[in-house]
Structure formats: structure tokens, C-alpha cells
Amino acid sequence: MTKFFDKELADAIGYGAATHVAALASDLQADIDRMNAMRKAEGRPTIEEEEEAEKAWFRERMEAGERFDPDVEGWARDE
Image (cartoon, rainbow, N blue to C red; front, side):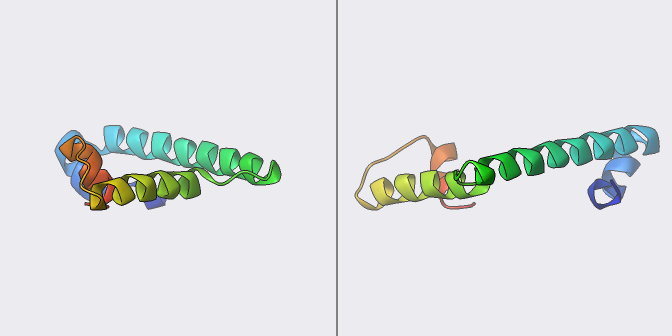
């Protein structure tokens, strides 16, 4: 949980609330890790690998001149 604790957040919302956010983030990361392990066991890509393939698809189309929502374009370019 300590890797998710943010001092700036604690200063802004209080130590107790920031600790709660860190605990939620830690639980979420554990869930993501479990999902990725299950996906790998099934021979499927991890969530991150799948996302990278999706970003590549959008970048390909953007390079060909197709336009998307600015948020999607920023996500595809890792901005």
C-alpha cells in the first residue's frame, strides 16, 4: 500500500482519506495482477498488452489521416 500513498494528496484531503485511497489503489492493483495471471494462463495477452495493440491500431489510422476524438488521439500517443 505504501507505493500508492501520495503525500500531496494527503496534504490536500487529509491523511486518513489518502490512506483509504492508497488502500483502494493497492486492492485494485492486486485485482489487475490476478486478472493478468488468469489471462496469461489462458494464453491471452495481459490488459496492458491488449491496450498497446489497441493504441497501435489507432496510431496506424491516425498516420493514414483519420481523425478521432482528441482524448483518444492523446491516449494513443501516450500524452
